[in-house]
Length: 390
Image 1 (cartoon, rainbow, N blue to C red):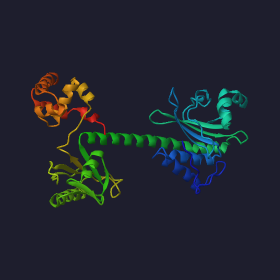
Image 2 (image 1 turned 90 degrees about the vertical axis):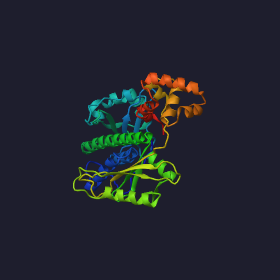
Image 3 (image 1 turned 120 degrees about the vertical axis):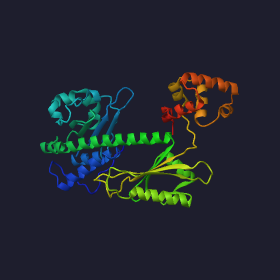
Image 4 (image 1 turned 90 degrees about the horizontal axis):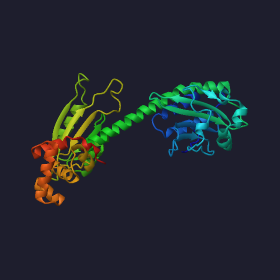
């Protein structure tokens, strides 16, 4: 964990009375945190400064067993709260009613607090005495602990400060829900991108000006070859003039406004390669905007690139599990799926031709196919390729 100082443009005001600018500054920091976990430390530091606390912590995940859990804290440069809190389960603030703000006085007396092992062994050595706490429930059923603390000798949290915290809580809850949604979308998009790459399909996304917004790993590998397709000045181009004229025409067509957003433009072409290898297969497809994104910087065109000559290498273990083959049979099947003849595959695997034939007969028996072309088809259409590593 790291701690950031509160920015100079934000000045904390003790108590619950904030100007609109000050309240807006807190909300800005809270919603920025929805975009990236790294922003939470900055957000918590602003809240700590506003409430004159010595610590503000967001308990993301409680520790279990060898897992120390995750606590994001801001402490104004003081000693950082150790996320591996072995006393956390002993805290009177564990298992709170979700979304209900409490202070120490709502749960137990000062005498009982001072006598508790949690206070003696954990809080007192770290200068924690006054506590304001809430467990925030998210849409997915998760619970995030939010804690603001002050040292002994400081004033307890006033009713006005509690009221201010309650005003912030709905925004913290929304930011956590937004963060979960954004993070889930990122993970799903990454998974789709990896799946396309494993299937040897490159994807180049262009904005409304026809400029490259992003490439998946396969597309990046293809353009880096500079063999028939390249990116120049943030524009995707074909090497040969005739191919490039056709590609640019297709991109312009995909960018052109259409009478209805229900119809997308899809066109295809082959782009020759100076190396003499099989041409790249290209498909250009428009991505229609919605009412909120039209005219703004947004994904507008997808260029799909297929390497018809490339060889894929699915994990042998996955192919074995799918087709119940031995390791030797699987290796042979993969060579055949990549376009080698039986003789070429035997040579590549350094086995006798008769051994390869015996393996092939066994493969036919286990997969239920009768011809080598059928074997190639079922292998190429199997999900084994999706398990390839980058």
